[in-house]
Image 1 (cartoon, one colour):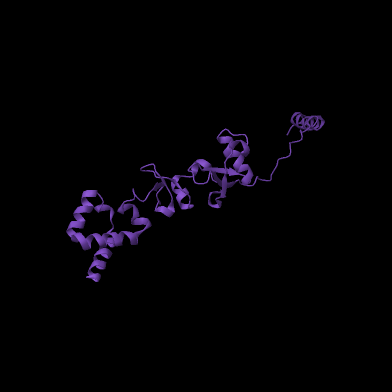
Image 2 (tube, rainbow, N blue to C red; image 1 turned 90 degrees about the horizontal axis):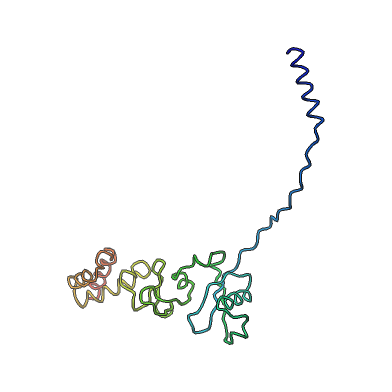
Length: 196
């Protein structure tokens, strides 16, 4: 290093030390406490199918949200009794993410996805995938996953009356034959042979 380079490096160090240090603006304090997740409620009129999934801090807030959604200022203006029920299984879920089948799984009523009629699990409605299917719309293939014992019983009754060939023809005509597992068919045939 020659004399010129040395002076340049020495003067750069002195100049850098002489420059004022920028004052850092104080950063705003961050709130690191996470808000508690909202609780899930269903609110509605007893005996009616006007229930709504509401995420709120408590039952009173849930009722207020339900009333506000329907354009009422308060419960007195509404004039009817309202029920509110906690559904812990839905806590933290977006209200749009709760599908019709979730209502049946929570032992609540919903309208059938196929016919549109009001139905309830205690009256035979079942959750099939994300849908609700009332007892009248429920098919044998719908029951394969949820109620295989019922499928075996239904098939056994039909086989006992119409025989295996007749039952296969009936299933084929309905478009259900391919949707009935062979294991359930075999159990139904065995049940009929056992009763004979």
